[in-house]
Length: 124
Image (tube, rainbow, N blue to C red):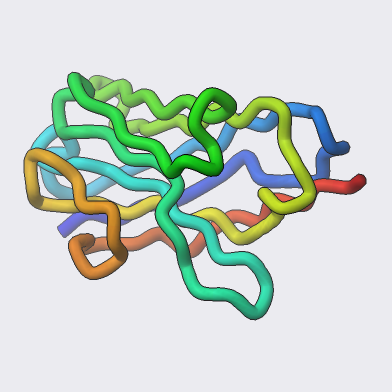
């Protein structure tokens, strides 16, 4: 099993930046692809970005492409999500999730383990 803890959320003005961190413990972290998802108030959880288990491949939702960057450090059991040029519509609870597949899924159903989430608020 893998335990995931997100951190780094907070309040930021539109146009600003935040970095979210997903820290893992438990099983060998490098055996899992990792994804970031977000859930705005009253909406379904949606895919944001994902990274393969060795970090060679990354994937992004169209809405964040060019603004967000996902990376991982398997030695530190950490995945980062760097968010630039934030918009009010980026406000949500952000979750990281671990996927046993070598190439991550872009839907929630493909993920085996989830963190508790971290709130991101963007003021206009």
